[in-house]
Length: 491
Image (cartoon, rainbow, N blue to C red; front, side, top):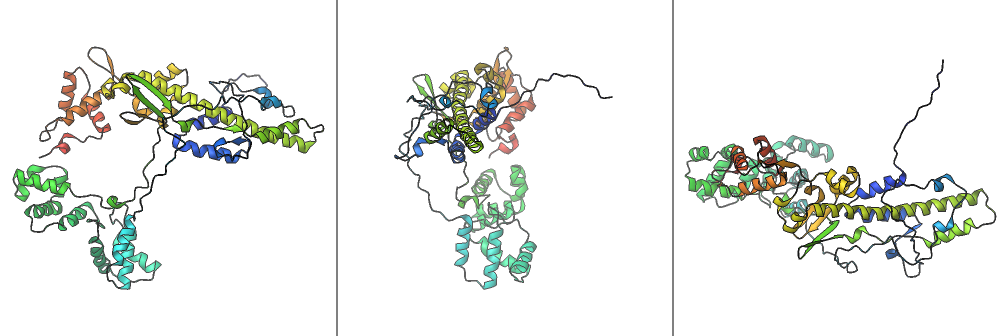
């Protein structure tokens, strides 16, 4: 028998406006301009005055209320499909509430283009050198195959047999392994030295053999690279002295010679086109001990609702007769106007959220931003900032994970200002960044012939009042990309 019963449920759903705001909040400054251009292309009711010509009419859209949360959605607008209030969209005021005056201090009107250096790529440089070598047609094809098989760092990791098969199937060129090895020697004579090596040992050896063969230090360096590379990488200098027959001074010269070599010869000739461009979202300046926070002006674009679309909506709404097609036209225009309004609202709320979050972070870490001393950084977690600004932790996380701030001592990701708390012997809570700074100073000032082991670093921290386990010291050291004591040893 079918049983019927009533049940109450409490559900929380995100409105389209909230989803739009969340997506915009995550977008970094460098990508915001692209996102705005996409919206301008998709929605003809949205306009950017800076892109308009002098003949085009400029409208003002000012009916934007201050809203800290998108949870308050107008149910009256969504419930009615036939009745619209034109006054919601037509305003005669000349003020521009949604446009902001945030600036990063730069003159945005003067946009100077950065000249781009014309350079040949790594592979083009090798091809140019190959063109200058007198070769047979077959050897030239083999040389091109070898160059095309190199990795970006300049190594040849593709098996010789695979290249032979490629030439046989793709170009109908039948060759032997000896033919490829002969051409490989030719390619390895090209610049930069060490190119087309099949492993690190061969790479270093090729570079050393380009140097003075009569220099005894070079001879010893070649011996170490070709026969004792494992001991060298592990810094077992005592074994090297006995194996190669060197005293400490000679070994020091040999090690210095090897360290001057380039383990990745391909990278030295790469065009730097893949560098990540970072545009700071905020700027903090120190004005006689007073910190001043500004938002990058790229985060405050001037956007307006199209006057022609508002006039069109007014005309359709006042029409005496409304058939089905006219109602559809009115609905379409209203939807575009709503979309433009929501997007401008989201941009404005994004500005407010960014400033509110960064302002709270700046005041929480005020001493650090004044002094640039990491030991002044206070322990801070996402919840601390969320409680201060009255927002959810996820909102603070979205801002911290993708936004940068430019200070007088560098540009940093906001996430780097958050750290865990460590309790000292006096019961005081300090940031783990303070401990990392002390570790960095200790390691930087250590005797490189006798570097400090993790146990000794732990003792130093305990003497200073930081009761931290050795495994925690090792974890912090690894987070700072500092190798173990044995690998920090120098002659």
